[in-house]
Amino acid sequence: MKLLLDENISDRVVPQIADLFPGSTHIKSVGLKEAGDSVIWDWAQQHGFAIASKDTDFYPRAIVFGHPPKFIWLRVGNCPTSLITNLLRSRYEIIRQFIESETESLLILER
Image (cartoon, rainbow, N blue to C red; front, top):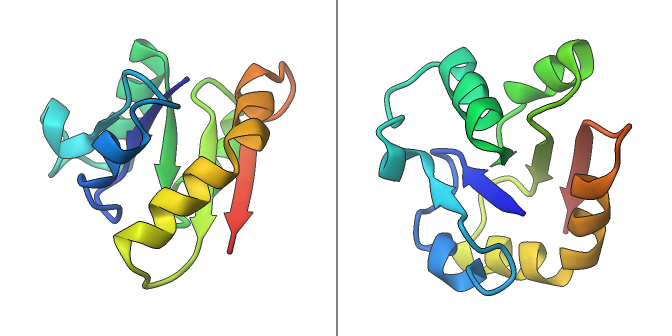
């Protein structure tokens, strides 16, 4: 279960979730910091990542195009990095089931 963290999530989250989500990365670590949403979507699809973002930008894509990639929308607003880390860690089982689902394209996580 590899997560591609969008620019609105700190790259400091990656090492804090690596034990549960090995192979996860941040968009700036793969050269996508200035990339548009369609480029990020295509990259995640080609490399087997689920996108995690606080933006609504990927929501319509997940609805219209389905998966892959899967989209995890973190509806948490402005918050500390620790809250995002805790959210991803505490919802591990839900995220795992979502990633393994053959039918689901969108997962919304809130505090």
